[in-house]
Image 1 (cartoon, rainbow, N blue to C red):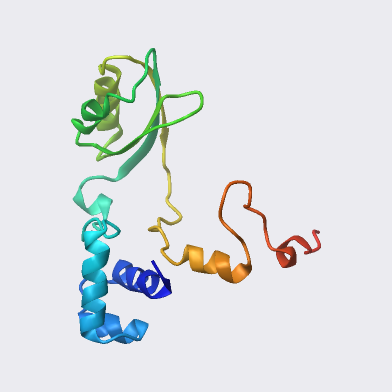
Image 2: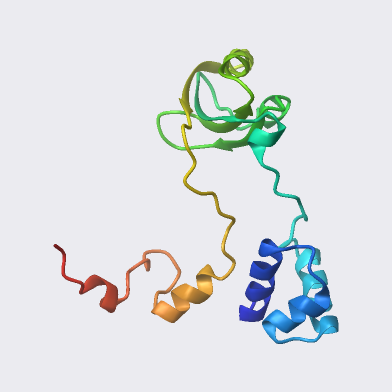
Length: 174
């Protein structure tokens, strides 16, 4: 994936409905070349789907919570149990004091409490700890140009090579 592919992805994240002509113009390609690159990005699974960004509060999902799930056994095989709860938007097996982290959206705290009861009923779950979000400062998609910025700053990827460029580490601190 080169900088043009990353620029195409950034453009599509801003507006996935724009024409291939507009996409191509934004990144310096013809409409046909932009279409071909997008097709290849879809084939390779880089573009997984095209979706609409819906305001959760407008459709009854105004309560957002992150729930740490404790367990008495390995939870890695329980993905379908979490997926069966439609209020769970994301579920992740994690390292640390809990086994699973889930992102939940409901309309009310009463509904959140019901979701917590249903999570607790999943085989192997021994407890939950919910953190309710009071305000969201921002949410952002993955920035496909991040690697390009790291390269421009002189950072390198790889095990043990996550060091800041010298110019960033020489700043005086207050």
